[in-house]
Image (cartoon, rainbow, N blue to C red; front, side, top):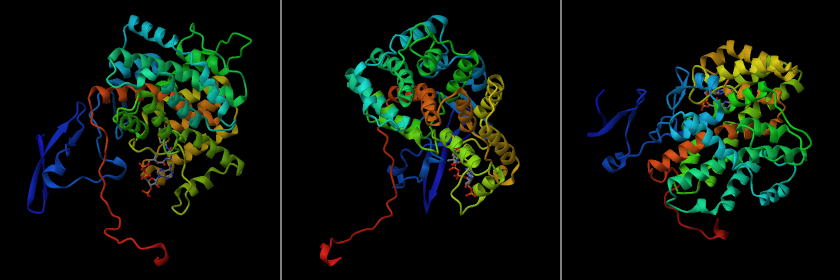
Length: 428
Ligand code: ACO
């Protein structure tokens, strides 16, 4: 491949560097184009724009490939633990036994949150959405860790904030759940691994020891691993762009949580179950809702179907579908909503509208079903997605800092009114 591209505009021509990533992805570097020619590029929604060079996650949407730091997601989901994957994403290599032990030890010894944080919980209305709470509480952690606000922190100081954030996130997520029930919060217990500790704080009681079902621990590990990173999606790009202003780690992650909340992104897992409930309440006629999804005059979309980059299949959905079948069988769950989900999946996979547009069930279609089977309320689903995505956000934030990337600041093409003279209000 030539190392430059040529752009012709009128009778002028401009040389632009062509670059290639390690997996053969090709790009034209237009960063100097405006200085050279006066032109910017326009790409609303960044559908064809690379915002960075990253060494964390590779995905090929056409071939259905996803790898973290070069390791296929299938291998990690089968053999690894969430905390090991978090280490891999953040530090770039699989940990040795000692490194993993130290990482787990550090995390388990930072899981307590400041008691004053509890006052925030008291301030939220009892029915407030868990994602709103999570983004506020993670932002508030900066107030309890003022040293994180300093510019030019050493690598060790940054690392300490990373450890604290991973540790406290699971405590905060489980406390949001407990508070939604009006139950007392359960404190972390250092003897447990990360996922067991999270389940202990979420489903445990104060009065007795809690031993989660190994099937549940394994399903949680798989779900968290599958969500741990997904390169430059909406929330990750948000984290990087907020961090690029030198905003602290907590503020950057809090912004990412807000971006994840939307139903077109992480909020889809909640939207899937709400859609299935809607179909059930309407009598369970899946054909009717497939027809609605295909009708351009109807705003209804099949939630959990389609993906911006996967146009073949979502490799995470393949893994999770199996986990979903296993867990439903092992827990012996009978649920009409889940039957509707299976019918919908079967019909949509054969319908030409969905086949032609390459609309396949995405990870959120199945994750919502598993979370429901595990006993989580629907509104917690996106919070669980955030818990899984945290290491990816941190890794991307850290990479952006280490690359010394400039502040993110897109251009625009202005299409509004040009010069107008102000008129007094009584003359309008
Ligand atoms: N149901 C019905 N039709 C759909 C759906 C759907 N879920 N998704 C896309 N389409 C149709 C569009 O109407 C469009 O049809 P047209 O070409 O006839 O106009 C075509 O498929 C392409 O859709 P776009 O919206 O242009 O695709 P885009 O890449 O911009 O959007 C998105 C991807 C947002 C994921 C979309 O498929 C969607 O809204 N899905 C439902 C929400 C969802 O599940 N989101 C989770 C994504 S995964 C994640 O964030 C972890």
